[in-house]
Length: 125
Image (cartoon, rainbow, N blue to C red):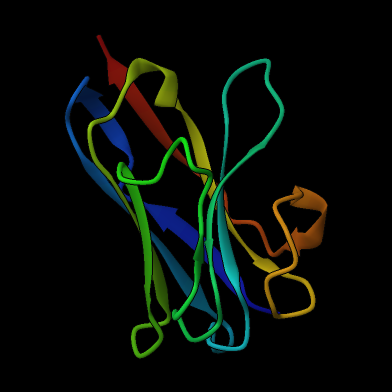
């Protein structure tokens, strides 16, 4: 089973940028669509974005298009989330995970597994 490790989080002022990484070990990540999710205190885990196995298709809510960009480098076994124009409401723990069946099927967290430990993103106003 693949193991995922997120990194790149931190404290940033509103309007700033962060680039999160999701590094895989144990096996190749290229067989799976990968999703990014986030969870704020007291809230449910929320879908952020996902990318197909080859990286040719990305899935993002309309509200975040233009601010968040997902990408992947299968040679490095890593998926990235570039976040620009950050807002205080983006504050959360960000997680990556792989689709259980390999291909993108939707935005529900139950479709994904091999969750990483998460990386904290805090945006100050």
